Image 1 (cartoon, rainbow, N blue to C red):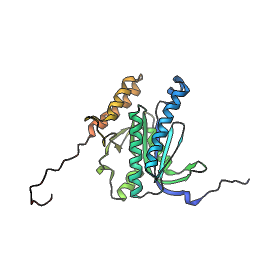
Image 2: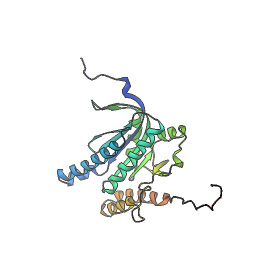
Image 3: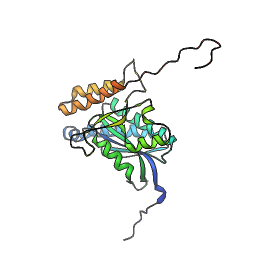
Image 4: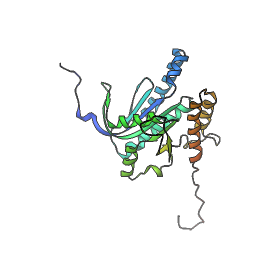
Length: 244
């Protein structure tokens, strides 16, 4: 059999990769009109499109309620780009009252955007850690942590991330919880002294019916509140003093 689609070695690279899953899709489809379901998906697509347009180093693709983003390399520059896209993507969805969870990894990934062919170890790992989370959040998978250490930008020293016991769903192959760095969602923005992500999660929590859903919001809010960081303001130096 002759195939028109060919394997192209240049599509196989070590890359930064992100996987995201919109929560509540099944219930939304069963209880909402097609327009309401479309509205949620359209908002997510626009959020992805908007961030990747601003960051050409990052590409995205989506299928139903799953979104992926990826870079052209595993460099520090591409890390900065995908980190920004991932954090703002999740932020925009949550503040739009669309629950989401995701994970960033780093590894081999084949990306043929023209033919919509995507596969690789980076996808497998990010998918596993993304799906396992029992809250709303964005975590760094072990491969991402390892690559950041190699680049000299350890996850534990980044302003918008903190280590914690990440809650995993019962029955997950990854266990019940694991110590990993996760994003302090909304840490980088404040409206009237408030974190918009906490406000949005609290509102979604109040609308939740099942206890298991309520718990997802409570755990996410607790993590953000526990790890909130206040920028340190430098005191003005006396005239003629040596800079500290």
